[in-house]
Amino acid sequence: MGRPKRNMLVTAEETSTPPTLLDQGHAIARVTKAEGNNLYSVELPTAESLLVELPSRFRSTIWIKRGGYVVVNLDAFGDRENKLGGEIVNVVRDEKQWRKQSYWPSEFVKKSAYPVDSEEEESNVGKMPPSEDLDDSG
Image 1 (cartoon, one colour):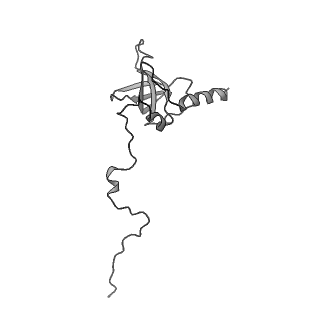
Image 2 (cartoon, helix red, strand yellow; image 1 turned 60 degrees about the horizontal axis):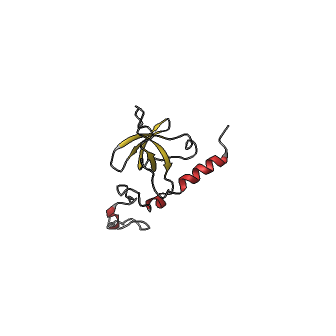
Image 3 (cartoon, helix red, strand yellow; image 1 turned 180 degrees about the vertical axis):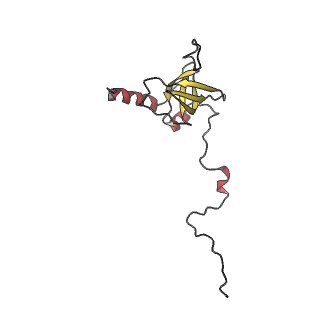
């Protein structure tokens, strides 16, 4: 039997608003790859790569896409000898609101979807293709 709807709504509400401060041992990381079995490879602002686990309260409730951001507890598995470097404690859903917070790392700058030099090139949208002047003198 599935989880009650109210539990899913509470979990979704928790991830929609950013906290005022990050707890000690927590860091924002970018998801680079889904490894399977609720494990994700993430990249910290220091360019260090970690393997983190998605806790059961987020499973089948919140979906994490590659390139998205999560808050990772780096102290979660510090006392155990394994490959896991931390646990996901929050998923960044409203990225625009999270970027306004003072703890957002400057290493994760917003990348434009368009190339930098795209403004210099003239757009061909809505224009007819160039016509070739053909001489019909034959």
